[in-house]
Image (cartoon, rainbow, N blue to C red; front, side, top):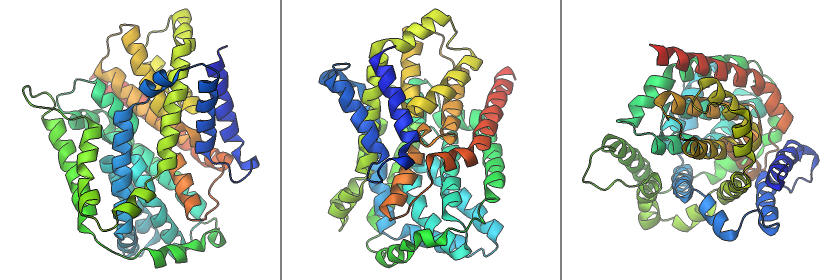
Length: 418
């Protein structure tokens, strides 16, 4: 067994046992320490570690975090909360919240939606006398499922969209994944809604402080950046296969979109400080860990010895689901795409869509399985909240995870056979 594989397993176990570790230890501390250990042990060099990081993805996440932070500072979260609460009936409030966060995830990625959604959840929980912990877990499920339908909904979809030679990537994702995502979102909401009566209101009196600090300032740079991001992504998709013009990467699109915030915003320095740097470091460290794992050859050896077909739907679903529990879905997708190249498989749309749907749904099982779960947890802690534990998350999300994977798996098989 390789050292890289052992270190990866230890990272998972430490995150699972985090509730018994000192409260000052965060998830990004554990992942970063794992990356440092692998560097010091010579399992991966500094140069190899640098190139193992998908900087295009990091730049895009930096951009959407900047936009999310600017929208938050502009009071968008407060306004969204007030709009959602205006519908009065509890079921309609929950439905409005879920739909808002799902759409936000599809447009701005699940990670940005997680940043925006946490303060909204705090206000809804207080006004509706709901338990904050189950509402935050609903947020995790919603942004994960909502992100499935869009090629820019989550980091792993961005990697897959870049890999696939799709005529129109938005159309492809909608055709293959929209229906199972909609069914899964409905099932998960019905299941998790039953836990909202758990009243933990004493755990988030910081909501008052949040509301006092969330004064609306300059709005237009944040709104312009959000609109610009959406327009550039749609144009990039529409012109993807047009020859003779420059095609910017998703990272370049993100950086261009957030220029109004940093050029014209009054609070550019504050926004830069408020960017979720720990999560970006978590991602960078995670890429280093998985880069070391890929370099060790452990996964390649297993696949060679087992003789499995990487294009076979069952294999794609099995590997992407279970591997995501140990390594998180983003690096799993990155590794799987590289293995597809190394084994010279016939990469088809069905394979890529199965990889996208299953790896995304896998994020519903454990906190570590999706970075958006980590973001929700860390954002809650930033507001002084003691959020859900590893096992609370697992208990509520296990049925959601299994149902979502099965629904997506059988739908994609049926759609491919049409």
